Image (cartoon, rainbow, N blue to C red; front, side):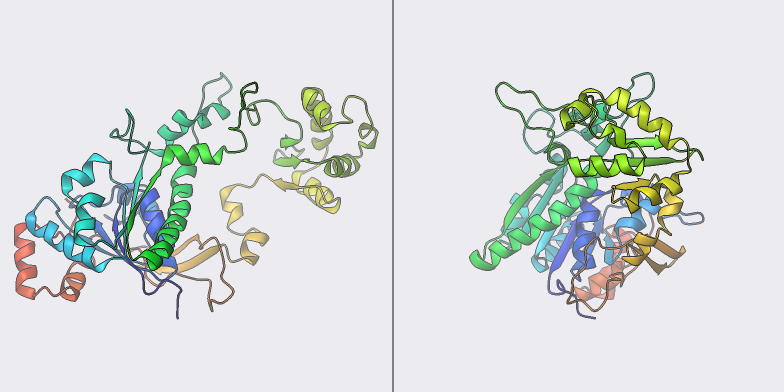
Length: 399
């Protein structure tokens, strides 16, 4: 099986989600990814562990397929020497350790470009590498709070709540893979590597690009923060919710016809987009009363027949078997040693020239699984490997 990035070599100094997801997107296209873990292992190995496994979890398996791993203690000179040998081999380094940590471990871009001037170094941080928070620890939920995202979801008492869907982590990964390809393309012209900076906070601002526009005399929109009747969910008669959406005049007409509310089309309260927004509360009550008369699936069929955008609000267990998801190969299945058959999300795009859309050719690695394989490949002898083990330079089990 030939994959587009088979000639690209990637070194992964990453933990948790954003960094590992970035390198997984490259690995899914055939890039040779070697993941360097600390003696404690990637923290995500502990995130919802699989029963009976001491080093595999849902969080780790989701984002570390198609990689090999080596567990190195970079605080030991021998461990750093091995890492530098891998840097000479690599085209790309991805690191999402706190900005101060790569400098302390001597794996920052400033160190690595001296070893390999052609290296593309993608540094991922929480808040950016400048400013008062640059060196602070950070996670997706903290970036949500700082970016204004958290204020869009509240408990009944008004308390803001973050989303446990880590949008910025996943967005940084997708943008990071794109940025790496841009830098590689430029390197093909100039022969010179460079550093890429990515951070969660900026990505949360980018995800709000439509809302975060203001001029001298105009504040950012309250879109998503105030009641809307035409881009929201309604309770059906069976206790399930259905999302109703109307973004244009034509869709407003289609919705009214589907709900048998044609008298509202020219109602002076709702005959323009602006009025429908201003009178959202009364319009919501009218639509809610109608939706509550039939089951959600029945309304979904009616609305679709009238070309009105809609979907029943599905539980996660329903998504796995959704006809649209299945038809487009959005979920893949593969054998994960130590766990069994795993179903997870497929690469979220397709290439027409590829002969397969199932890109899992290596299951997520156990901790230290490829230590000896990688070291032998890079010229180390069995005696040297035994010495590394005795000195604690490489680890076979999580401390």
